[in-house]
Length: 133
Image 1 (cartoon, helix red, strand yellow):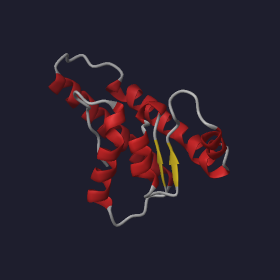
Image 2: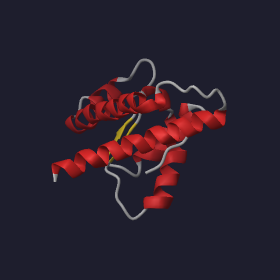
Image 3: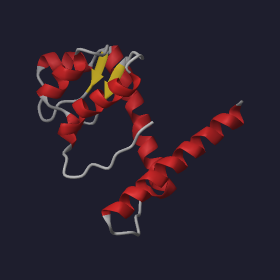
């Protein structure tokens, strides 16, 4: 689909940028849920993303209120939170396919390594799907 190396950007800045990019490219599809790690969360991000999906999985940093605790105990939230581990597994697979160590110390070399790792992962995934059918 898409990959990007974040330069001089912070995790908390990315969710709304990602949302806008995906809507511009794939706006005709309905997105059921968004899932982010804890460090992507901010009130603005939660507000901007929650209005467009059924379930937003974006754990809050620090202590959570009773209302947020209740929300995180809902079955739908737990279902999508468990699916988030798949994303972590995909990141681990990228590291196994070359993104774990970059021998080229330039930013362009790093971007090339990441891009080739994403390509390798996608080819690996397509091969697994092809073998299944």
